[in-house]
Structure formats: structure tokens, C-alpha cells
Length: 268
Ligand SMILES: *Cc1c(COP(=O)(O)O)cnc(C)c1O
Image (cartoon, rainbow, N blue to C red; front, top):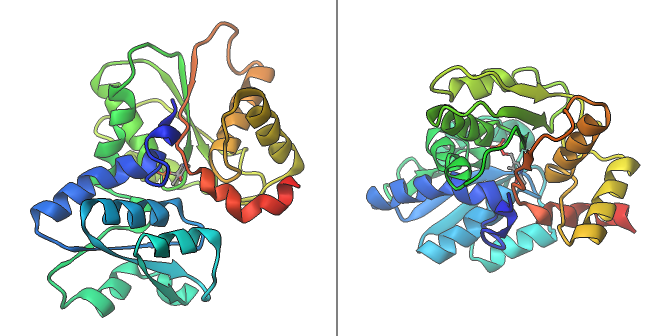
């Protein structure tokens, strides 16, 4: 499912995660959206563009030292204010928000990656838009919010689709607990913990090779942080026979292709 085609900058699941947050901010008459992310955050870029498109001021708190890169420059072009914060201070986002914006009635807090209930509800749209049944759905997960939206909607529709969630973090065993917190009924899904390629934003040559192969044979770009790992997981599970022959498999292309900008060296 080509959620990467939703919008060039408000891409994929980040559009879905922002949708109800922006509606809520609008209803509350807020003018200034404030959120958090790393220096190559797809969420921060999506927020910068969505803020510009829908008439909000935006501030992004960026984790770590002051850096300059293509992604952050695009955020600035969309008018976002960037504030770099020390990694320790960054950990407590509520405190950080309050320190700068508590007295500002106009501002609206959006969690890192857009995570939360409103975001989960937006992600249900991925399933609502389908007009065909699939035996398997594969989707990448960071916070697991997108996964929770997919699962809640499958469950609402009484579908028995097998859901495989590809964790992009190394050994993050709390992912299913995070997902379950956002679920409305229990659902039997699988978290795949073996396709992180060394950890968040880490890669291996076989992943880079697959991204190149797939792009050059289909015209579809995947990124090394999320969707490339999901694609790898699908092909690997097919190869090892985890997935029966003849199955219909749906991969959610959650977007975020600009993540590749931070890793172009690896593709040379
Ligand atoms: C942010 C992101 C994810 C992770 O989404 P969660 O809801 O945090 O699990 C997956 N894929 C892409 C391309 C992303 O940018």
C-alpha cells in the first residue's frame, strides 16, 4: 500500500498520525504546533510542511548537538523553528515543552513521532481504504502507533489477517506492550525482532543491496530505516517458508523515503 504517495513531505504514516492532531489543534484554536525528533525525523519534516499548509507556526525540538543537514534545511524552508537540545534534556519532553511553552495558550504539544491515541485513530485509515482481503500484512514499527491503528481496524472489521510487525529497534521487547496499550480488543499479531540490521538506522550491505535491487526493478524507493527492513522481512519469511505459497501479502509502504538522505554514502 503506497502511503509514500500520500504527499511528498507529509509522507505515509506521518500524515495519518498528524491528521486528527491537527484537527484537534484547530478546534482548540491553537496556532503553534510543537514536537520532537531526531535530526533525520520524517515526523518533523511532515509537521513542518503540514504546519505551513494548514496555517500553523511550528517548532521542532531536535535531539542532540546543533547540526545542519538536508532534512533540517527542508524543515526550515517550510518555516519551522528548530531548537536543538541536549540528549539528556530531550528525554523529558513534557518538561521541555513546559519550560518553553507552558505560558503560551496558543501552542499545542505533539509527542515524538506523532505518537498517541489520535495518531492511532488516523492510522486506521490504512485498513479502511483497502478493498481486498489479504492473508498477511507487514508493517514497520518504531513506536508501534501505526501498527496499533492497523490492528484496531482489522479487529473492527472482524478480519483474520495475520499481522507481522517489523521492529526497527534492536531488542526492544516492550514494543508489543506499547502496541497493546493502544488496542481496543486483543488480537493475535506477531512482532518480528530479527530485522533491525544492528539497530535503529543501522544497515548491512544485504539491506542496501535489496533497496537498490527493488528500486531498480520496480521504480519504488524504500528507505534503510523502516520500509527497506520491512521489505527484507517479507522476502526472508517467504524464502524460509514461514509464509505459505499462494498467500496474499500486503506491505504497508509507510513513506519516509527522505530517510535515505542521511545514508547516501552507503549507496555509492
Ligand atoms: C515513523 C515511521 C514509522 C514508524 O511508525 P510508528 O507509528 O512510530 O511505529 C514507520 N515507517 C516510516 C517510514 C516512518 O517514518
